[in-house]
Every structure is written in structure tokens, then in C-alpha cells.
Amino acid sequence: MNKRTKIVCTMGPATDDDEVLRKLILGGMNVARFNFSHGTHAYHKKNIERVRAISKELGIPVAIMLDTKGPEVRTGELENHKNVVLKTDDKVIVTTDTSVPGNAYRFSLDYHNLPREVKKGSIILIDDGLIGLKVDHVEGDEMHCIVTNGGELGEKKGVNVPNVEIGLPSVTEQDRADLIFGCELGIDAISASFIRNAQAVREIRRICAEHGLFNIYILPKIECALGVKNFDEILEVSNGIMVARGDLGVEVPSEQVPHIQKQIIKKCNDVYKPVITATQMLDSMIRNPRPTRAEVTDVANAIYDGSDCVMLSGETAAGKYPVEALQTMAKICCETEKYLPERRQFTERSGVRNVNSAIGFSAVEIADEVGAKCIVCPTHTGRTARLISTFRPHLPIYAMSPIPATARRCCFMWGVESFQTSEQGSLSRTIYNALKVAKNNNLVESNDIVVVTAGDPHTSPRQGDYTTSTNMAMVAQVQ
Image (cartoon, rainbow, N blue to C red; front, side, top):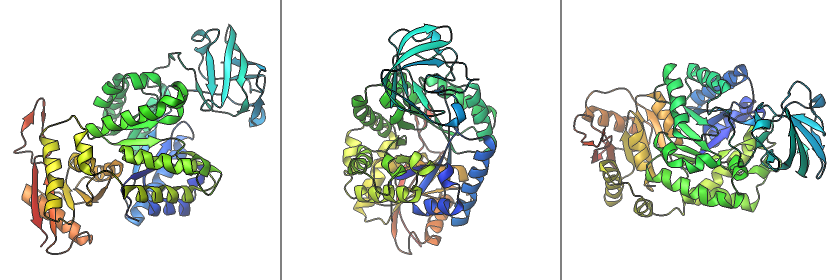
């Protein structure tokens, strides 16, 4: 199955079995997401090591992504750790005292300042909006509410308070500890939850740099109204974006989410940054072996819009059918990719014009004109491969890098397969070595025509405040 859209799978109890993990990697998982809202450091470390070991065993690169808890509010413990049913029109007390287990009439949230930030009439939504409460009045640390939409309440369920700016810091103490832990393990990427502005991204990057990860991929999750409002500044300082539609569809009217999703994807495509579309993509497969037709269409439309990656959350983390969900997602990707728009449609909608984009687009045009077998991108940073990826060529894109972390970062890039090469000095030796690796991996044969595109740091022109990273495209014949 020659899938080009990348798939992110969330790890959890359903993937604790090595055989399941092996099937996920063989079936097309490109990124393993570890949700630090749940689980201990010891649990995540064990499973990160499992992913790496099986990835190495199979010879298939898999990126490790840490998903931060972020400045979120969650429900507290319940009596006997059993879910309770809240009934519509019932009165319930919501407290910030987490020491007493909750029940159907009184339960806790883990944000102590919330009673001072809400007011009469404020809406509190729980578990992606499945449960709705309306604040009647506040007494000290207790919010007396009316249940406007009943449902089954569980522990550690997400809480949203639309139109109330939560005073939690963008990077919490738990986030800081988790980031440092991730740095120690050498993770590849961070999906940062509830990012509201560019400063939060800078803070995460600073923490990582202080602990040895200087080039970490940071992909903020756009899941609140402020994140949407400040999206342009967030994108500018980020390596990519995740459209986290679950909380986003609670924080803003759900009918606005499709348009927001399309706008975010377009803006990411325009500046050559990877974008992940996430949340509830095949949600019914948590319980059922087949998706709904609407879910299939949702995944396909995300790919048509220009998503580099699509993501599975509960489907692989805790569902009954993790492998089947992955296989279904891969099939949808492959079928949809047959009908993707021609690359010219992607470039015509982009407002970005510079040396990088001119060389990248020309490389794709040349490859078509000369009947090339593939496009080969020797790269230290992955930028060249990412640039070519944006134009959605029908030809294979092979990224060749001497840096393992760069090879794994390519797991976020549409259509890019990465291979590790040895370090070479001159540009000519680098290109020769890249073609040799391609041949050794049976990607090309002797006499095949390929297009090679790369950046030569000795001749790259400066544009504004930076040096162009991609400035060369050439046609080569495999020896």
C-alpha cells in the first residue's frame, strides 16, 4: 500500500501489546503520539522505548510526538472511581476541592480559580460538550449549577468554559516537567495543547533548548478561540500545526469548525509547514469494526484540503479495533490520493514567492518533463523535502539525511520517504551518496533519470534576514 498522507496514532492501553504495535507500524503509522494528559513518566518511557525498538527492528522510521496537557481543566475523582449520570434540569455543585470524591450532586474540577472567573449564566461544558452546565450562582469555591444537558460524567474529563479566558499559564508546571522529560528521551516533536499566542510557543522552545533539544518540531494545537484569533503569529514561530477539532468545536460554534479547518490548512500549505487534522476522524471505530460513511468523507476531505497528516486518537489509544482503524485510515488515504488536485492548483493559491518555492516548483515541473523516476532531496534540516512535498508531485519524494532526527521529522511530511545516509563533505559527494542509497534500497535502478534538489550553503542567496535553504535542482542519471 503506497500511502502518501501520514498517519498519527495515539498510544494507550490498546497499543500496549507488541504485536499490535508491530501491525500499526507495518500498516502505515508514521507518528506515535503520547498524550501526557494521562499516564506516568515511567509508563510513557516504557512505551516510547517499545515504539523505537520495534521501529528499528522493522527498519521503518516512526517519529515520537509528546502531546502536552496544557492549561486545561479536568474533572476530579468520583466515588469508587465509577461514572455517574447527571440528569437534565438537576442542580449540581461544582467545587474546586479535589480531596473529596464526587457524585451526581457534587463533583470537583482541578482549576482552583474558576469560581472567580465565571459568573451567573456562564456555561461549563464537560467531555467535548456532551454535558452542559449553567452557573446559577457562586459561593466561595463552589459553583451552583443547573444541568442543561445531562449525560454520563467520568473522571479526568476535559472541561471548557466558552467566552471565559482561563487564567492558567500557557505552559504549566506539569507541562514544564513533561517537556524536560521528553527532552531527556530525545523526542522528535511536541504537540502543544491550548496554545493561545506566539509567546507560548517561544516559551516551549526555550525550555527545550535549555535541556538540549534545539531543533525540536513544535506543532501547536489550535483548539480555542484565542488560538484562532492569533493564528498568524502562532504559525510564524511554529514548525507546523495541529487542527484539534474536539475542543475547538466546543470553544467556538461547531458550525464554524469546517471553515476554520480549511483556512488553517491553506495557511500552513502556503508557508510549507506540515498540518495535522485531528480528533474524531474515525471515532465510531472505538466501538465498531467499520466507520460511518460520514467519517470516511471527513478523512478524505481533510486530505483534499491539503492535510499532511491525519490522526487517530481514542481509536488506537483505547478502542476495540486499533489495527482495523489504522488499516481503514490507510485505505481512505490511498483511495483519496488518486484524485488529489494537480500541483499547479496548490501553487496558484499560495501567496508566497521566493527562491525556495521557485526552485521547488521548477524541480517538480522538470521531473515531469524528463520522465523522472523520483525526486531525491539530500537534506540536513528536512526543509527541501518539505518544500517539494507542498507541491504534491505524483512522483515519489525521497529525503536523504545523515541526521536521524531529520529523517524522523520527515514522518510529518506528505509523500516523503526518508533514508539515513552517511555524512559527506562536498555537494557532489552528497548527491552521489544519496543516489547510491536510493539504488541500494531498490528505489531506483541503473540508467533511471531522477531529479535532485538541495541547498548549497556556499552559494545560497540571502533573502531578507535569512539564507535560502533550497537553491539547486538538477537532472541526474543513476549509474
